[in-house]
Length: 337
Image: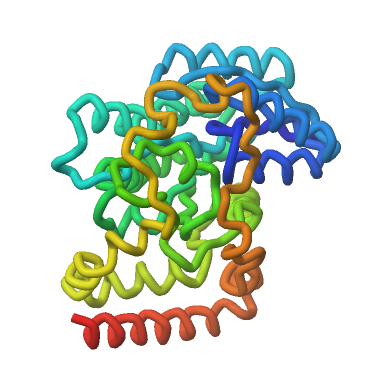
């Protein structure tokens, strides 16, 4: 039976790569984002891969727009089986340089956008007692870093909101599934359109993975929504384990390295490029940015951790290896601190 899948933020990055994978399955994919050029490109990707697509422009910060989009998608494709929340925005700047309006906007999109998407999905899934919601998160949801206070706060909020919701669904003996996938640094276009007040071009903290790695993690979580969280990428595993063991060391390490690690060598005068905080860049430019960012030459096309985590017979070895990696990271941080 053909699945109906809704993906927010579907015009670029992880969401775009995920849409393409669902298209290859022959799924019917509803794409929600603000920029029409990216939406059109994503819809074409899905169709070329073998699926069906409907692109619906909407701002996930507005519940009414998300509700309207879901209604259009179900009218076209039928009941929604899987809802994947990915849409976000951010500001790269020290907290003291972020305005109240900017912080609010990041929170409205990157946190309340997930709340709105989940509300709309649940209003349809609960009466049918079926469906899966995937929250695409980040390692930064449990280990925050400097220069991204609004984004990290939103991702932390998603964890708490989702845990509460999961308990409520368990109390109801509901068959609706909710799961979270925590991502590593990914080569997406966001670093070319994020609002930045840094002197150099923003970049993901290495190691960097391609969006397709993250997309495969999303698909697996949607197909197997039994675990509380999925972690994608060895760096995610090592970081989150180190955070559990030595958070104070990570504080000191990131205070020393976190500023430079998030900036490439290229100098970019502040205010010299468009950003997508309040308006979609691809909508203003009429340009489709695609799934990938500008760091292809530095990004990994696969993840050993992801492969092994999808094979339970190897999982125990991964846990041991991850614990070792976390321990080595702690030792490294201790030495540098």
